[in-house]
Length: 296
View (tube, rainbow, N blue to C red):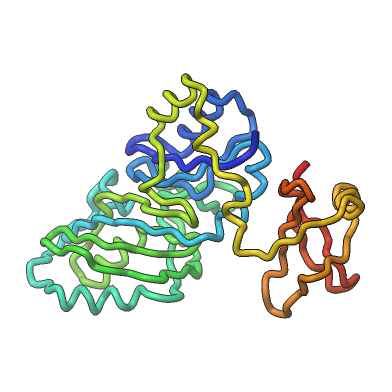
């Protein structure tokens, strides 16, 4: 069986802990997650298994929505509540209006510096490995996109944000940068991922309930098909002859779908039986659709 599970990761577990648990429960070696959640964070964690692991790279492009609880007045070395306090400041004069103006500067396409305590690599080593040794290095800022940033509650020193963002965004960095802008320091106190692409927290299943579903042999009811995250692409049903060409890695001509310049020219190919056969990408040099990933 191949597909995706919408798991609600609990606080305290790493994303790999969840992968390891699922791997044992369903007796499947090929299991992976899309979009790491820190141990202190909870919420939607898509778990792909079987051939579903081959679409992780496309799922990672999907937008995510978080509920972030931030505490003003204290900055930490990890940018969250698990770290060591490195600065304290006065937040008493900060108004809701001042906070709103500061938040506007973080909307849209921005440059963000990853935390030292992160999985980003520096000269082949993870930053968190260096940070644990007391080593701090200069990190390159990276472009990220915050689509929407809404202040839902402000009760100093705590505030709550709902953040819709793209790939690579660190909510911890957002909290730290906000504290620096306000001059009082801040850190991420609590984080919950509400959605990830088509997956919503309201439909997510806990590990405890999933284990019960496995024991009762009904866990398959919680599986989403691989193409559930690819449905924004056009589709084509291919003939049996074209199916064989795709399986052999050969390109095909597909009537009814055309390549559009400047767009992500990928299409989903289905067999006549309705099974997802392949992801096709347009080969501009040869003028046909080439299989990028084949699912057999």
